[in-house]
Length: 145
Figure (cartoon, helix red, strand yellow):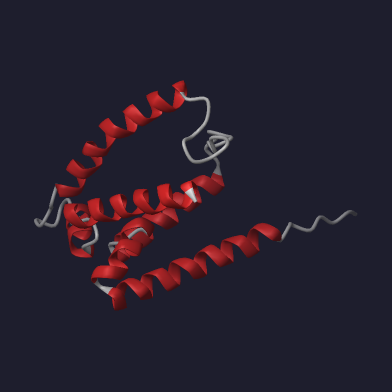
């Protein structure tokens, strides 16, 4: 129960922050990416910079904690390796973000504000998640001569 409550409060706070900052508006995101087109909007840069302070504090606090508040262990990345899979995923994410003006967090929050366009994006996003899961289960076949 505690885990679900923490997830609900955290998700609500995150979604509200995205909505208040305007990051659920695809046009604002596209304007941020339009550096040379004359319509550049630096708002997203300020939102990102504003996230650095609390995240730095959270990482410092996490190092001092034996376990999370609502979980038994921390689930941290097991590797910091930069490989083709990571770069390909980052490029695909960036292309989708630039084309749609949305990424997963704002898209979910946008379901409450602009349900039809957001639902289209979320459906495509979930399809991509499913394709990734299927592709991850398919192992390359090796041939011997």
